[in-house]
Length: 158
Image 1 (spheres, rainbow, N blue to C red):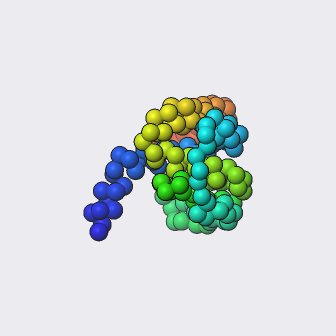
Image 2: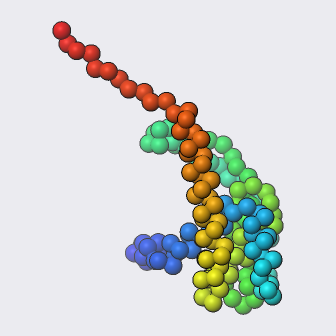
Image 3: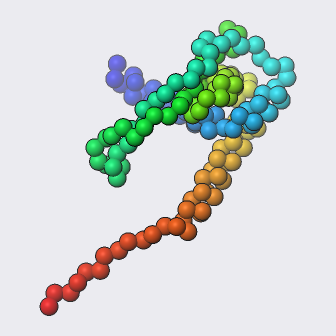
């Protein structure tokens, strides 16, 4: 059983799905609504687990290597849908925007369909990933100005 789990984690399709689920989790609600409006006709789906708001405990480590501690709680919304008799989609997003979680789950299910994947990766996931990376780069640049470098000078003996 452990080998099967290990192989599952390494499967290319698993890594690809993890990637698009991460992008969908960070996606702005507006972008998901716009992408949904472009799909004609919109596919039928049923909600397996309606969007639910809850809390998750965030854990941290001092310096990234120290003992774990409870950092605090974060609001999380989850949802599960199924396309007709097709694939199931899941979403976990930060915050409490119910429709955003539902749309992320729908797109997860749509991306599992071979006939839709290429177009959605190109027109939705690619631009969302680029926007996210640009926002992160801008934040890094903004914070770089406030960075403080500490150093220690070694005293000479004698």
